Image (tube, rainbow, N blue to C red):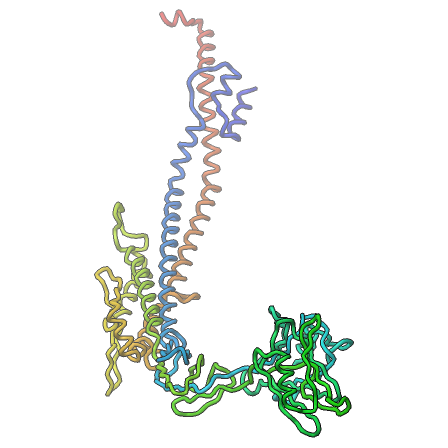
Length: 557
């Protein structure tokens, strides 16, 4: 390889060790120049401006991080102020205290006027409900019969039961009722005594009430449905007409068909009642005593018992009699919802609507916490930290300097009462909120709670003013000049940091492309040429000595 070829390679590949190549191709071993190190040292010196620019970028990054944290903390303070400065916020929150929550409790909407009321609950609203006689199981075939379900609004459905009918068992009967949109819900309830159909209105009160009636049976022989073995009757009644005389026959809870049969026979109604037993349980048979005179019974083979009648709640509110279809009563007191739990006509219950001191205290303390975070971050920029040699990276930033003044100035807000009026809360200090020497705030909970319990209106007026123009609005407006997304001081400042960072990145890139790259090529070529010259020098000296006839021994004298 020629020397020119080596040099050409060296100028295009800086990482090549020229000395090693020369030693391999020419045998030269003279200590020369470490081209790579020499070029790196020279380039490092040439990049001095870049290091300054990179340091500026590091400062901009630190400033961006610090200002973003301050921006976030300031926005949190502003959010707290906006929450306080709201007709639906914590200052408008209300709680309702009941003298007997076991009878009536209540909740109040935000902004409800503070007031005291007396409630007397005479009766609760109830929901209409019926249940059927027991059947052996949900799928046992029902006796042939029919009944009619009628709502208070007049809607009705007549359902035939028994073998061959759509409703031939309790499950099918429930499905039929639920599919007719009568405002009731039917379900099958099973226990150790068998299965029953339970029907309940979807709404409470008299408007949701409903009735069930059965078609009368007329003939000379009638049999009831079976009830499961060991089961007894419930409280119920039916009429029996024989010989033109109608008699009401009643049953009591726990009674058996055997005792009922005895009761009927003792009435001498012209019929004979017999209690029977079969595989499905017990039943009652009634037959005309002479076998020919017909009788009519109002409750045929499939009977129902009304377990509850739909009724409206009855109450008085401040002496005014009211009814309600539900045990949740609205409209009786403006902004207040009553929850009735029990009826006791002789017990008046006192409800007191007051400010929700707990919710307000939480909101105020949150504001103080967030304020302390923000002022702490701001103040740290003007403090020389332990081990540091200077203030924070934003110490000279005009936005931060101005923000510090805005935060400290805002908490000095004072209410000026209208002419002829007074207030117990004109400053934060009156609420137990005081400034510490480091600019942070402290809350005296006892003072705050006292103000909330004794003068809630003055507290709300301090924060919200007469028209959302009190302390909260004043401080919020002062911070808006910093937090406005489009052109607030934070946005402008951070945009400036980003623009400067981008300009420096471009400057560094241009410097690398337009200067460093060429400089590296030139320096590599220069140092490579010098290295080649140094490595060729011994051979050239030997050649000169040979031409002059000088040998190393002669030269050494």
